[in-house]
Image (cartoon, rainbow, N blue to C red; front, top):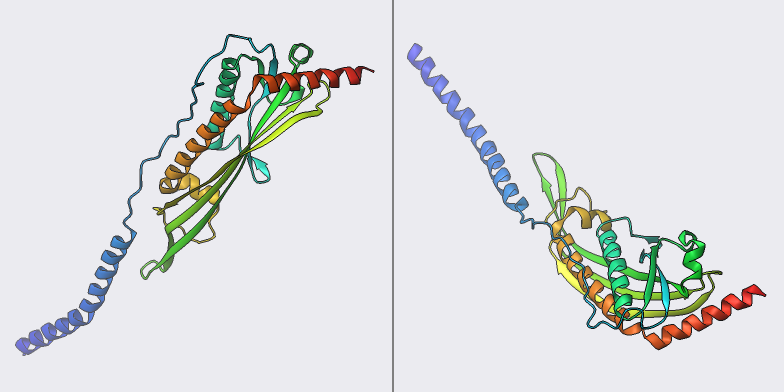
Length: 265
């Protein structure tokens, strides 16, 4: 009798095992497949380098024009991006290189200032005009998504399989009167369009992803993006070097003097 009970128990256990085994196998395969699908390669974060070396140098102050410079403004649509990475480093480096550029051209330089209000009386009296430089900048991204549903967690994840980014930029140069803020001279210099593609490495809980969040959290996006910013920087400084013509700046200084005399009367 005990022998028959043992056989029944063994048979019952086998039935349970046979019933459970497919479930366990399915769960194991789900875990393995899900692990394979979520395996991605995340690149180390790239640190952009912004620099410009004037191709030649004139005698110090040989142009006989003194320019007060404002800190460059990075325009991103409707707001300034100077206080956010990676644009803050771009702007900081740019003001230093513009000062070196102007000095190499033979101009005297005062500043940099954040605005005309920062200029004291002595700055206004001892410079011919002040110069504003802005980078008018726009970047747009188009994403192709891959979505996956995890049966265990019952959560969907989303990943950018390929993204395409188009960047447009222009340098805006504006000379203004120290005393009235009157616009004396302006140039808008187009830097053209730059494009690149990337594959995302981060799993997102939603496809409603902001440009900024993806930029700061996914190095696979950050790296090629900041490398394009380096190109924008070099092109901007190169075109500025060509635009700072001594004779043209002298003409602006003459206009500034006329503007000042008109406002005395």
